[in-house]
Image 1 (cartoon, helix red, strand yellow):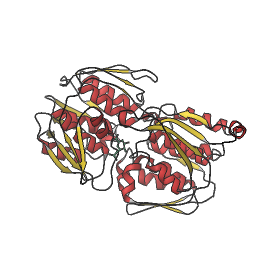
Image 2 (cartoon, helix red, strand yellow):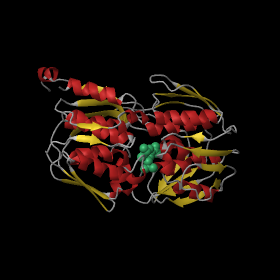
Image 3 (cartoon, rainbow, N blue to C red):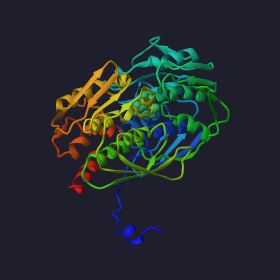
Image 4 (cartoon, protein in one colour):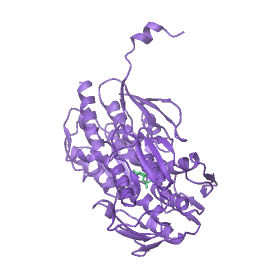
Length: 431
Ligand code: S3P
């Protein structure tokens, strides 16, 4: 029998929520756009990236109600998009651009897709090559940078080994198969990236088999309008977990977060680093596990993160690297070259900024090596508008006495609206 007085006397952890999952929001909006009729999405992310997806869909003739925190998003889909003038601007959102190009590959319109300065520098041949193989006409041919013009039409089946393990590439090609009604079989080269597209397709009745390292989609069934709910974003939760581990306050509960294992591997790495983290699972939504994460402050130690682990914690490396700078010993992240082509050169900027603050971090080939120390870090972080760098370093500043500042925390609105206010509130309450 538990001692009830002890249970009653325990302080319950402070509880916070994070906004809706970015990857799932993009995918549900795009799937709703293809379903003929009215769909509803609850708990959708309302960040700048999610708004980019809503905005391009509206230009294509899909009705999408305004994205407002706490409101349902209503999407009236149309399997064939409407021609439009000008180009489709995806802002900073790589997921919007890549998934959209997959869908446009089978639409009987010609469309030009572009984005902001950061997005126009990101590689696209990883999707334009296989889309061309499927029969999409792409200009410039072999186009590796936005703007890219795509003329859709009827597509051929695809069997393809992807050059990188990437959920954006996988999602693009599976959506091309979905919208174009053709089978698609894909293989990821080094570790599995997030599998939201596969899970959602299965939840909507499609056959997506995984066998011998191949992911095989069959265009069985029809996409019907749906009502879906988006769990909290596990990558946004990572910043709050990071804060809870570093700050001197008590435990922090982050509730109703997506717990898909291809997204929560950072929790395993943090446990290896010695972090006290527990997870309470709840009911799954559309094949996506959901629950609470409870993280408590404590000492961390350096670890080695292997190449195959990277795709399932790709967005958490900024937070993990910052935490590694505060751990005892050395942390090595193997084969993280992909970070060079994220919203910024995240690899270079992580090492640069940790160095500016007085920590020791080196890029060795494609590895990132961070030496932990208890030396106080101080200085101004250059984010180049990268939301995840801004949030990871601002957590360090908030948890360790405010000596670390970031040049632009407003860019956190790309994925986590309200983050600066939430962090400030947590910092006030743990003082
Ligand atoms: C995403 C995939 C990831 C991630 C991005 C969102 C997605 O990119 O970095 O923030 O929703 O598919 P890659 O899997 O292409 O590395």
